[in-house]
Picture (cartoon, rainbow, N blue to C red):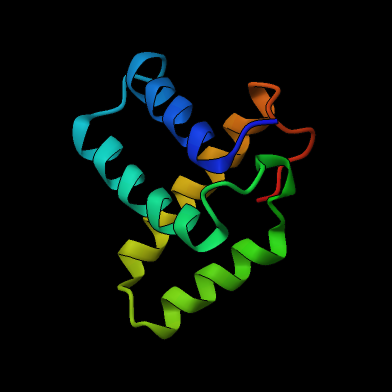
Length: 96
């Protein structure tokens, strides 16, 4: 069972090596996902991630006044991360 923090490390490598994402994209996703994982708990097993928790997290960002562009990037980062977790066999279902 892999933690969210450990899965993030693997995802960032995937973005750089396999997807060829730009440094700016990787930095933005890393920042957004670190904030997300801090809210979820770094030692939380990835397979315990739930859709409701994602929605609640995004709601908190709205309440904090995050710009729409920042919210869109955060949503994209979380969706990509969740898709990666399934494709890499780290979890059975996509929480996003």
